[in-house]
Length: 502
Image (cartoon, rainbow, N blue to C red; front, side):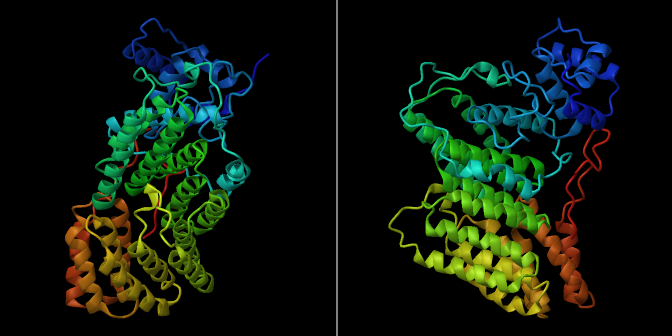
């Protein structure tokens, strides 16, 4: 009795553009390169994988994942291909990276496999553009009940086995071993270093390092450590996954970024940190607003608010409100935006500071509050030009409060301020602030700053007759990078690739 066609494999096979015979030859060649010269795959076997749902034996799933990853220019895991793990018969298309939520014991395995494939992809210089973002409503409906339920990690549970079954981690990696408090403390410090670098220079230069560190932590999580250490490890995994997602978003790898945010939410919940899970999902919401999908962002913010729990500190809730307000501004909902920002200000002011904020919230200070308000009002000004003055005020206040090492945020503040001045019919001030942004944008690897620069460039069009503005426009054109080359592989174009209108 057959299982039926493997639709996931069939879809990806169609995108790749290979013939069945060609894929069989590639599998044999890749397997030999990976140390399995005895493997012999033929056309009829490939046909059975696709048409009857036959699952190939190891190492074929890993070989296929590597081939499709390189061909399509984005991470493709074995479960993306529709292959089950041993002992999961009849569940071939469940508990994979695109099936939410994952069962608890799958999080470490999904994390390890996805980061491993991402590293392989990155080494080949490819960018993930061949997949579509999951709609916010789909994520919300899949994860709502799960996120509010009790964490899967049970305090005091006894473990007779030291390690998850190794077939749950499908990528080859180093031989993992238990770690102690000192090693975890070092990992926690490394997160702070990566976070500070990202804030200063953007995500492009350290993304591989963060993904590599996360891959190692995934291997560590394959062991059942004492409960207090296991929770801390899950916390490190959540923090690194958020950083990997944010850095991926920062360089335009949008589907990859979204998967890291979802991995981060899973990891945070495994460690019993619901506020961290909510903040991870709020990152996905910010991504959606940036990409022009504010309705999806609002869906995700509902999930972030609901999933964060009562223990969420007022400052964290204030941050969540600013993202929601930005989404509302993108839809021209000025009254709702102002109300939401007012709630954010009240929450921020009510935080007495008697409870130290978690490490992942230390970047959200008063300067960030004003920076997000400036962005919201600047966005609303596209619908209601009278909001431009408010954007100017908040952007100036944010710049006054910015601490050293937050260069990317300062660029965003200058761009918000310049854009607000253009909308407010003050081209002289706009020119001044735009040039301040241009002074340091070339030292930053953040593609998001380029996206915002393009948005500001669009606003200069109405002042094209001014000699000073004409010179500014020429400088912006020189500062912006050339359009990226299309992803490699037949059939990738149009397969859900993310585009931006500027």
